[in-house]
Image 1 (cartoon, rainbow, N blue to C red):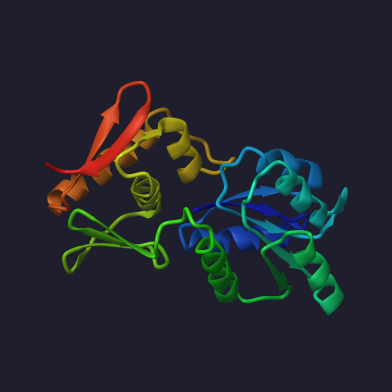
Image 2: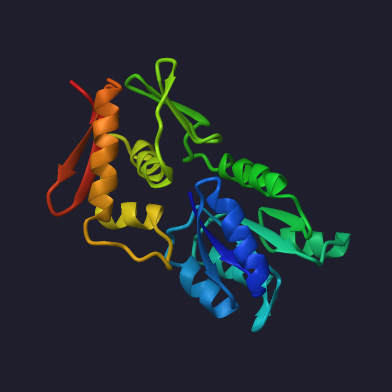
Length: 224
């Protein structure tokens, strides 16, 4: 999963990024409302974590702007302003959830999972493809009764390909799912992750194949 974090306090932002990374969540961080508007309209994030008190305005102003553009990306407002009136105001602007600071990372993760289950086009929590079963909530891939040992970026590649199984995924889309704005991407890094994942799927007899589509990207499909 790749999310956008809109937070002007560096220490809070770094703490959240570090915590979320442990759960294989790629986090792009911006500090201002203006940068948030630009980043969010790229439509590459699965969700937005949004602080209200930003240097150039109220973070809530982002939500109606996104909705006016037809972007239904889920938004969780994270703020110290947690009284009833503030929560109601946040939800009335179109935010999907409202979480008052301080909060436990476990609660934030639970709320993220909840809002990501709401849209109709989001896959079910556990997906079966070939002999592979993937639990999107817990980030666990199994073939039969055996768990596949996959590092974070291989998991992100697998998730992205599974969500579009049978369709070609453009290289840029895969990179956006796997890397954040701040990551330095080596020219062949993505190919290395895909190659290792392909080999592990084959070794586990998962019944899935990853095909490189020259000049475009990759395709995951059932093995013949």
